[in-house]
Every structure is written in C-alpha cells, then in structure tokens.
Length: 129
Image 1 (tube, one colour):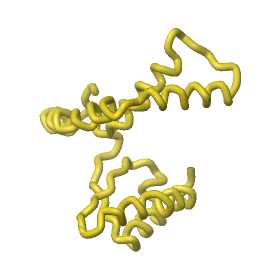
Image 2 (tube, helix red, strand yellow):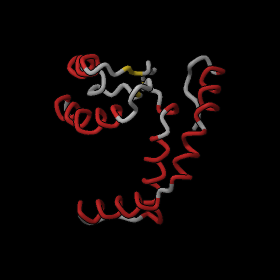
Image 3 (cartoon, one colour):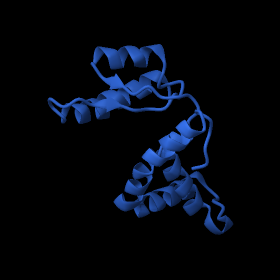
C-alpha cells in the first residue's frame, strides 16, 4: 500500500469514525510503517486535526494486532496445512477471521498495561508477548 492508498483508507474509514465521537478527544494510534509516517500522511492528519499517539519504532509487543496476526497464522497453517492457490488461502483467512471473538480481541487489548509496564521495566527494550 502506498501513501495515497493509505490516505484513501483514512479518508473513507477513519475520518467518519472519528467524526462519530463529536466533542470527544480522539487520539489515533498507528505503528511506524513507512506509509504511516510519510510526509503526505502526516500533512493529511494535521490538515484534518487528527492527533496521533507517539509510538516507538519497531515495537510489535505494543501492538495487540500482532497477536491477532499470530493467532490467524496459527489457525491457517495448523496441522502444517498448505494451500494450492491464492483463492484457497484467502478463503482460509476469511474463515479464521470469522472465528475471532470480541472476547479474544478484548484479551489482547487488556494485556496492554502489563506490556507497557514490562517495556518500561526493561528500559524500552523488547519483551516477549
């Protein structure tokens, strides 16, 4: 995904979502992928008055979505499953995605205070998550 494509995603999805919180302060969190920190995206966020959370580089332990990706990969490739086509893999990803529950996502999100504590305790170094 390039910066323009990412900006389109933000325009079509993030902006309406943030606007639904009328009057409440919203801080947007994203990792430091190059597309997220490009000049054009920073300018777009600023032009749309979207505050972002400062985030350390290379910090997957501080991003609950990494747990979701890990879970999906384990589901998709359980029992050493192999796929013969891109479509077959896509269907497996979609099936696994439908198995994600709000409780699973909540568990990953609620693990954040402990993760932050561990990162601070280790002086900003990586942690197991």
